Image (cartoon, helix red, strand yellow):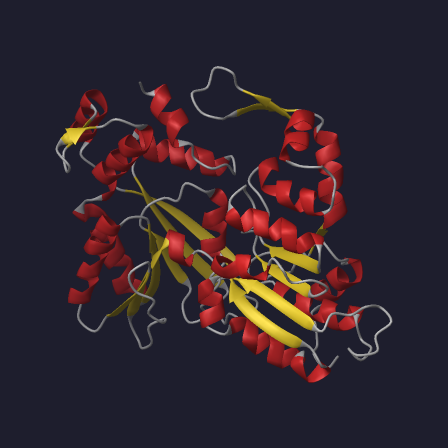
Length: 396
């Protein structure tokens, strides 16, 4: 094949089959292993292959990973096109374009095909008429995240069939909420059947520090009591608005910025993840630090990683949790907390790569001992997604 794989990649390669989820830590080498699987599985020439090898390979990934040409580099490295394959690399945003493709091979990079939205429906349709594998460091937060993979394999006729067999809804909840999962042994069996784990031996060590930041306790208490948004000057009507206001009350303060500046002065090169635009406005104040280069990756700007002796890279969770890597720093700050443990793990993996020159990787989580931050932290500790409606109802 011409490319040397690590031992953990070789072991996974022997276990892989069409339609599997290749589960490996962020930076473990899933991309190269996926391409190696295609080559190893269909080694004969494309035009005469008795195994029905596809002439086309489609790689569906994040827009950033496509734009940064990370997959392109791996394709060139393994010589996929030289072996006679046509290769298309595109983002999940455009997945619907490929619903009519047949008899090709699809590599789905990260589990964006979960849920019942357009991406999920397109994934199931494509998977049912092509060969495919899915790559993920964190395949799912709960069984619903596996639904479309199970549908693609034909384990269930449709979502209704899945729900009837496994889901007991909470009849008293004001929103769709699973009260209890039934027959989980069957679900576990299907999960084991489709999952190929690729544990890797890391040379890195993650050093995590939770940094307690002060906040205005009286203002927070008043907000929760009156349910009135002091920025919009209007009553708070729903759970989403309450959580947004509560988080802004504890996040939007100079104390957090001082923690970031202190870390940047000491460690020089720092990636900062944040949630909201008002946090970005605060973080843009880092431009005022002498000798510090500041760049952004978010819905407004898609700037590349900074270079030089001292820099800060401001990354929005929604835009940049996946699909890019950095081996020029060992430091990451979480300016505010993500609702999702899975998303947090994806973010942490941006600097935890097989080829990083660093051994000790440092992560700082800024938080307050406010009710909402503690609730988000508890949800992350359970490897769950923080539920705004549930939290708001419990504080009614």
